[in-house]
Structures are given as C-alpha cells and as structure tokens.
Image (tube, rainbow, N blue to C red):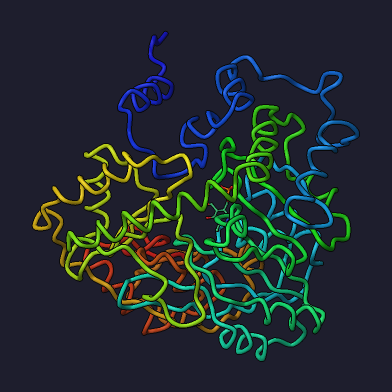
Length: 468
Ligand SMILES: Cc1ncc(COP(=O)(O)O)c(C=O)c1O
C-alpha cells in the first residue's frame, strides 16, 4: 500500500512555486475568477460546488431551465443562432461539427496544420481529404494560416468539395483575412467549420482581430484557453446545422461537470460585462511593455508589421522570437527557471498567453527576466528545414487505419505509403499524412531532422510504419 499521491502532490508543489502563468488555462489558475464578487464566491467554493443534475440544476443533454438560459445568453453574446457548452474541450466540439456537417465519403478541404482532433474526425467520419498547403514564415520560423490563393488552389483540385475546415487563429494567434473567401465558399455551397480554439476572445475589443463567428456554419472556441473558464470548457457556436445536438451528446460525457459549466457561464458574463474594457487595457499594457522589452535587444516580440500582408495578430499574446542560432526551447526552460510559465516553445521562440488578469508587475517580471537573459546560454545550432509540400495521397486517412503495416528503415521507405502522419518538430506540420507516399525529398528532410537530434513524430529509431 502506497502513501504516495504522486499527481496531486506535484500539482500542489507546482502551485507553491507561484509561477507567473502565461500558458493556459485562461483563468490563470483561478485569478481570473477574482474579478468580482460572484466570481470570487465561485473560486473560493470550488471544492464544494461539484454537483450533479439535481433539481433545479437542469440537464446539459436536455436543457430546459438554467442551462438553456445560459446557452441562449451565450448565443446572444456571440451573435449566432445556437450556442452550446462543451465540457470535453474543443476536441468534442470539432468532432461533433465534423460528424454533423459531413456524411461518409464527402470530400473536404482541410488546412494541413489542423489540430489532432480534426485529423481524428476525418478518420472517424471517413472523409476524403484535400489538404490546403501550409505557409511558412521562414524569417521568424513560424507557420502561418493559408491564404485565399492556397485555399482556391486546393479547391481547384477537388472533384466535389462539400466543405472546408480551417483554424482561425492559429497557435501563434495569427489569422488571415479570409472573410470574403468564406462568403464566396458559402455561396458555392460549401459547409464551413472554423476551429477557433484560440480565439474565444476575438472581436470583444477593437484592438483584437475581428471575430469570424458569423461567417461559419460551426465555430468551436476553447473558452478555457483564453477566457476565465475551467480547463475542458469550450463553446460550440452554430449558424447552420443538421442535427448537431445528437453528435454533441454522443461525444460528451453524460455526467457534465457543473464546475466547468458554471465557469463557461461566467466567461460569457465576463465578456459581456468587462471584456471590452479589460482587453483594451490589457493590449495597452502589452504594447507599452513590448516596446520596452524589444529595446533590450535580446528577443523581438512579433508585431503585425512583421507578417505578410493580409495577416492579423492577437496582441493579447506575446510571441517572443530570437535571432537565428538561438533556441526557443532553451528560452522556455530559462523562463521557467525565472518562474514564468510559457504556453509553448518553437525553434526560434516562445508563445506567452497574456490575459486581462495580468498586472503591470507581471510585465515587469517578463522585462526583468529578459534583461537578465544571457543569450550565450541559449545558443543552438538548430536545424531548420521548413517545407511546404503536399505529397501524393493514394489512400484516405481512414482507409489506412485498418490496413496491415510493417516497420521499414526510413532510408528504405521512399515510394511506400505511410501508415501514420510523420511530423517534424518544429514546425509541427505533418510532412507526410497517413495514406501519402513517402518521397525522396521528404526522407531527406526527415533525415536532416534526425541527424540534428530533432524530433519527427511517427519515427522511432529511424523506423517508419508503412502499408504492407
Ligand atoms: C487549434 C486547436 N484546436 C483544437 C484544440 C483542442 O482543444 P481542447 O484542448 O479544448 O480539446 C486545440 C488544443 O490545443 C487547438 O490548439
């Protein structure tokens, strides 16, 4: 019998470290609920509010009372026809949208760099996929959302596209102005799903990028990433559906957490009552400090002007980029030692998710940490070989799923069909997806990563799974 409670002990220890949380969740480990009295009451009683569907607390799977009312208020806030609380994260929202929007065998356009839940949806719903080429920002080592040119190029390759699945914004808070394109695609009869996991706060302030919700049929927002919601709390917003209620129920637990649902209700209330003012203030602070941090000449905080025309940037994030030859991963480790928790690192930098709950002293902490940063300690002769290729697809992702496979040495895999996605990291975009032919060019890129001790997800000890 063990007296150890390893997970809980570590969580409690982490809490005692008192890190500055610039990662998810958007509630910043509870601080976000301290905005007003009702939020404070929620935060302080959280351990005692884990209740189930007792009268009069309504039922998420058949809402008639307060959950129905809360969801209607949510629809009003975002200006959509219907809105749902999702307690299994945007993962469940993406799956429900994909299942409702498309039938087995439908052809869909998909951004190459979409989230795993979208890839899973493509397999489970047995869809035919036409990928939209990724765009790479070589100078900053970032990937960008596809332009309209890339979208139409992919559409031209389709036989009978039924819809499109896009991410807006991406992990870096970068979006592309695709509003007119979406209108056009809609007129052509395509169903539009937007994975807006990182953009639940968009549109609330003029200083943030425009919200995309009115342009899509289904929009999924991870409230828990940027708003004061508990982890796993997401919104599914719908302007046009068939029977999304069914799929949502199918992908969600029948024991939804009232803590998560209450926090989703609080996030909507927060946006209504404080969102505009708080985000204006945050972006004012962020801009002021970003100028100061940039003058230290150690990191450069990404600006919209650094991006090609047509792209927008979420100024409630800091993308700290480093000059060539320095490692973003080492910068993340350094900031962690300085008790700053980053959201993620990439080859040339780190992503920090700011929030209206950050105070001047938090920015000062970032500034001071960067000032103390000894760049010579984060040197890395990193290997970067960004790519923007779409290989030949011979089988759909769902078709390879049940096929027998064998392991072959990566060097002997040219011309074979990959069983799984092969994803060099960074940038984390699949170089090869399941069902695609492994080309000589792809093998050379992957060998380059391996030689430089960089990860390629899907390759273990230089072996790849290929279809027999
Ligand atoms: C773009 C994108 N979509 C969907 C998801 C899944 O969201 P969740 O964690 O809320 O299930 C993520 C999670 O990181 C994401 O980054």
